[in-house]
Length: 427
Image (cartoon, rainbow, N blue to C red; front, side, top):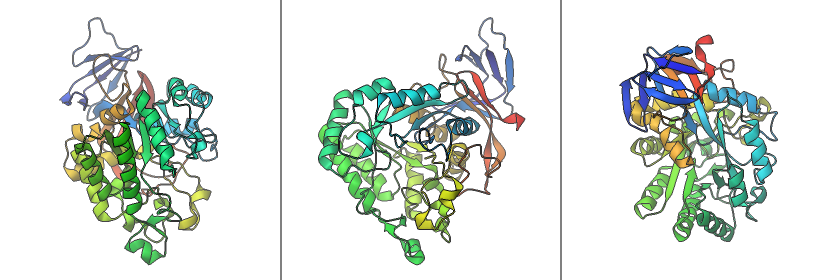
């Protein structure tokens, strides 16, 4: 299949390109940028007039809910959501049921995801068996099965000796270790940021210290072992400062932030809005502003959706009993664009945080529009608005704090390996 994408504004953060250029695709690869390759005759022409052509988005945190939680979402529903959101590669956390701690489970998931219209799935294997924080998994075997990194999702390793051994093992094979920084004892029974809003609503709080104390442990052990560490879903100004200082000291550490924490804060809990029940919790306005600035400066390396589909029964409960999480795959692009406009950032910089930068963290060949690269492409209209409604969301999880909002940034086409996985002009 030969495809010609014409009349678009091509933005490729990997090469810092921002220019009106046509794109030519054949056999699932990019074979021409700007100039028509010799003998090229397109089978299909996609008109990108008024649109931006960029690499497909790379999401570092998307729970697909398979295996084990199909009543919340299915692989088919979430892959449809990914394509509709322009996401062509994603990392899947290990907290499925059963947990991704055996090679067979990883192979089953990746095999199920091998359909032309499905995004590339990169599993994050469990660091410890059953995520219990006791016995290490067979990381080498899991890596051979397809795991790109190893982590605990949002479950902490309480025993620091186990964490030390895990990092030492990972460092031996140069496996990345992905960890959420949250002390389980300081966060115990907490459901919201430990601040004025939680106090007013009578909700149990999770202090910033829960993040910084856990982060200090992670960073110290990373320095001792030389492990490559990625801190997932940083949520506080103090946490960002610690990571910047650690990098200056020579520690190999990267981090990401979730789209919800980039735009919302504790004030958005309103009157017990369960849609805003997230992990880590939405923090203060100061923290939110620090996260926005940190992502702009590069102190925070990537932006992710933290996509966690929750069924209605899980959200239609009192705030402190509601399930944690929100849908995000289809919101990653419009919320990235919203942040870029508000921060007055060039699009080439903003799109890097959801394309080439997360691809680098994953260690995969994605997030680029160079010659010979896989034709994983997102074509979007930066002006056309996307309304966040239950009807418009393709994800089976319809719960998000942004329901009812309208954001500029509508995906027109998503291509995965040169296959047209989503055609927004038909909807």
